[in-house]
Length: 374
Image 1: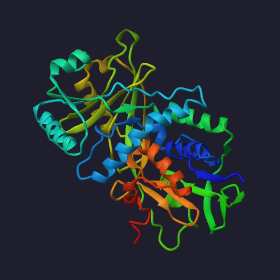
Image 2: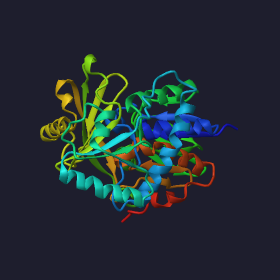
Image 3: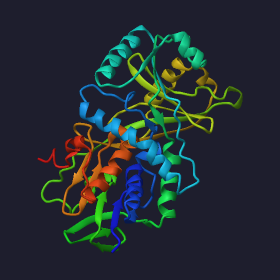
Image 4: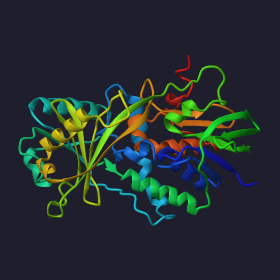
């Protein structure tokens, strides 16, 4: 009898999970009213375990490193089932300090990267500007990170959706309002009133929405999710100035973080804000991003402004995802915070390994979905 899986949530986590279940021989049903419309739509897409390193997050670093290792093979397999582009680029990242104080910040971060066995190469500012002539001559310290790659999240998510549909996945455009019952049969109830009774494994990958779906837990909801908002700007580089940069430029400007991501279509994505106030682009944040990006790459003043959007990422109290069994046939996969694109490869693989009773990545125990239950 064909194995089956129901995946609730059509962002990067849910779509990658659908794909990996298909790879494992499962018939897949995706439930989401509007796939690719949540945090994935607003993401930067950097596969950057080194540049994204955070102090005192050793467990998270191990998860990011493992997921980055899985990505090239995942992308190759996805491309077998779709002709749509993924925006995958491997030019790497330059980590830049704008002034002397920011350079000291970068130097301290490099020490921690070495401690975490994350490879980086120091560059002189002359070497950096030889590789990326658009960089400001006033930058202070530069580090090259070859191992950090990127995808274009909107393109990649569309490619994933196309791949899973080409392979026969069923897409139900509805909202799940409850998951009821226990082994051997669950009932998934949707907003339209439709109920799906199934013995399938159910993966709850609905981002922030996962905490609003009752039935699979008793007592208080164990998922302590909060929305963390991030603004992201898109600009188009004039044809005569393309490519403005080829590598991702990540920098510190007066201790504020900013990143500049080049895309294949001649656009740049500019971001790095992280706030918890309101779900709309914030004027001050947009001003800071444009000012800081222009401080590192002055030519950005010559670009055409396309859009600014704001996405809500599902954060947890310790910034580590919720990933694991929460019932006899329900797996939770959410809470990926700023690292959803990067961690999607590991999150999807782990969900399949759990469902098929295979050994999982050793650090996965830190992702226990019940660890914050009160």
